Length: 164
Image (cartoon, rainbow, N blue to C red; front, side, top):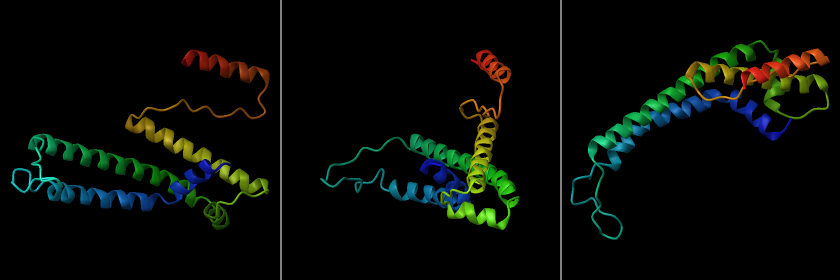
């Protein structure tokens, strides 16, 4: 298990905090916008050197603000979708398994490694479902073949040729 995999698991374990920060940012966007553009047509609109600043047209600025707010709301909806399905998986784990995920330490114990692999597989499926639901670009997710014979490998190759 590499550091990137562990950080992905940690990100999903702390998804509530991330959603909270995004909501805080959403509430600050409008206030920061108005505070930063309050002197647009004023003689006080100058830079550090005393040169008068030419502002962009107000409709363009408002359009950018609305676009930023819509993007932030969409991202929050996607994160809430991911949280809902990760919580479903996480609540099915025992308290010991949940503690092992929070510890995030690599163990020679194959059961713990399996827990991390299962968690990563679940996260991968959640991300794929989220990408399909919200129309995001994605890679094709192919589950690895376990104990696959030659016939199964040939079938997978044929399937990939049909898709690509």
